[in-house]
Length: 305
Image 1 (cartoon, rainbow, N blue to C red):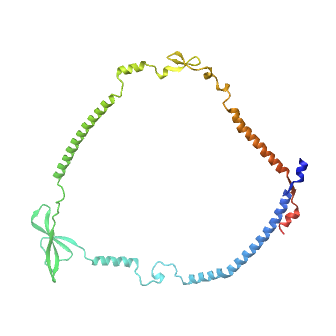
Image 2 (cartoon, helix red, strand yellow):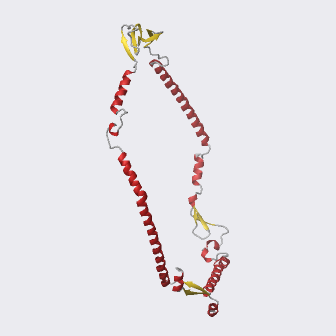
């Protein structure tokens, strides 16, 4: 059989450790040659960049440094002569605010002459008849057709029409308390009535005392246990035979062959083993049909020609 297989064997080349070493040595030589060429090319590019664009950038930077202003703490230090300093700006703002008109109030005993009165002042003069906290009439200067005159613009009365008094607030508070108390009593009485009706409805679902006593004397779950003999149960300590039970009912299952187990074994593991043996035989035939020959050094070197 072996002689027959060798006559039709297929030849395959294999690479040994020595052959792999030869391949690796020649591969490294090729890599070193390419790295040297790449480094030389990079150096040439760097030299060209240094002598060209880098020198140009240096010249441009030097020109920019020559034209820039030195560090200073004032606008004049940077050559700016047409702008306000912070102090000048603050002073200008303060001056302009002072020039603006500001409305103010002044209590007087007698109104001034219209021509002497200040346009930005509300003059407050006491009423002849006071009304609570409404003590003053208020006047301002107005100009009508080029003539100044004092015009009454109102008084110091405060309108509290939409505000409640202390008495009104106290009354409203008590009314709210009384309403809430009555509502709470009504709701409590209704809840008590509903609870009683619900309890009466549940009563029919529970046993009376007499019914409970009978239930206590009846056979309980704990009274029924396994009997002392095969095929029996114990009811309150007394063995009761179970009708229809034969000896098979209390024989250990290990004493019997499981139904269909032989057929299942034949269709399962036995069939699997047959398939595995057939597959292994096919692989052996394939291995016997191949012969392995070491690749020569000349063949390896030819790869780098």
